[in-house]
Image 1 (cartoon, rainbow, N blue to C red):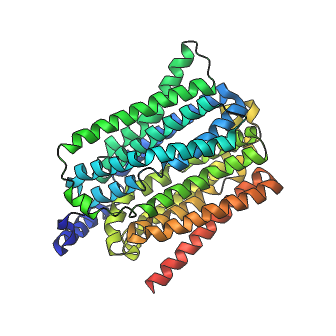
Image 2 (image 1 turned 90 degrees about the vertical axis):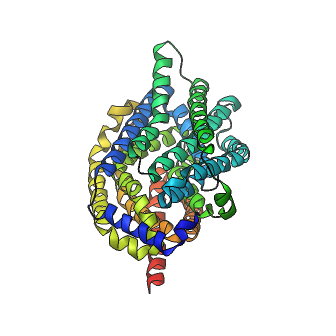
Image 3 (image 1 turned 180 degrees about the horizontal axis):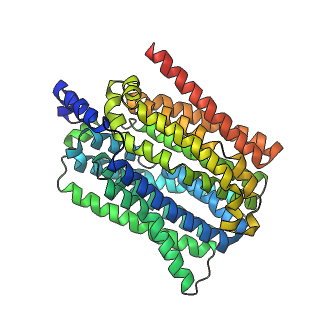
Length: 428
């Protein structure tokens, strides 16, 4: 890390700026982040509606399972490169050129291994349902596009360029909505093969754009200090946390697909999509707070809790409101996605508590990881992810998709209590 932030003067300057930024509550930055996440969710919802109607329950369920597997491996790209870049630029915004170049290179170094692992894992789950060519297109499209997009988003976030951050968030889903709409209006027949081709086109374009940004940043980068201080395992905790989050979000769909049916997995995914939309204000508040959390976290997790306590009360209030809205909106899912998705109503009602359990876990996880305990949190979430898979298999085998919901709630509560207990012991 740059030397200036190892001094007392540098740390004092960080604390002063952080206190000024967080003493006035939510402002235009939060509004911009929320707007960006809302538009991204809108484009993702439009994409979900189009694909569910065009592909049907079985093919859509197969795509959802593949997308979840690819999403899990995509967050491993660069071993926490995006999170480390956010941390670096939050502390030293002027050094973002060097950090961007280093972490962009880290992502590309891991891509060959991740592509091979993703293809193998996805084939073991969906063989017999999806051919090799569509599978390869999906894997390449998301592994090229998602890590590149996330790195650019974090780069803008760390420098408080929230408008550019919001636009970058929306770029990938918007491009896919436009491509799919153009393809269908020109008479194209949507299948897993054609949709995979469009995914590769949009993901490759995003990767090319970010590569161009990295080339431009390299002209102004001084990578000597970053290379000398770059611990290859420093981002492992962030990477483990992100990967475990994907397991919690997507493993249940794969389990339902294998133990029940791909159609049930597709319906469960639609109910989960409603939760993603309702979690927008919560995710936005967390994302907007990350820069302040990294700064306050240098003085410990107690400082983060004390300085930002108003935000956490707002967070819990938003979560409770989202639970009520989720239960009320569940009957409208078949109206939106089609009459063939009737069981999504009950799924949505069973998942209505998800915003609250998710918000509690996200609050504790964010405070801990930004206070230097990312490895511990990563281990907790990784163990929780493994237990989630085992518990999901047992419960889904006996109770169908309801077992997946119960497993999700149980793991969220167990992880939250574990991390909260650790925090109390550390404080004492």
